[in-house]
Image (tube, rainbow, N blue to C red; front, side, top):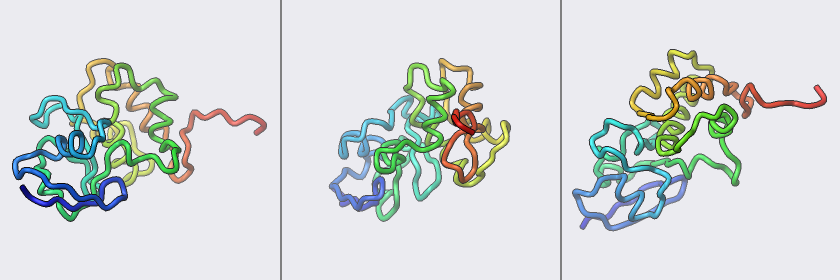
Length: 164
């Protein structure tokens, strides 16, 4: 067994792990965070996408011990004081989730893009989610949700403001 020390969703965490355990397995089974989905196990579907030091990675392809000393953010870690992030609100507003299995990975990939490119084009949004597969939506509503988030405003462009 190896000792794993990391920042998980902003909190210092420690766990004994087997050297061959993947990060997705440790997140789900070791820490009990089931928002990160385990799909293909080969890095093809993107359902297991998390941020590793701010960059999106397929956690099924990362050994847990490789995350030692690093920062990992899962879908559960995007909320702040129970408040959804703008991209999460946009997914709801645009109906960008159907069955929901791919949604956590999609949102993590979109969040990584928005942190780097606050006003992404449709092409940039499509490129950012190119490693995430969705069998239900056809991607258009997902892309619309991503491009609707306004930079620095903490809201999506479709929010209704009464009294303006």
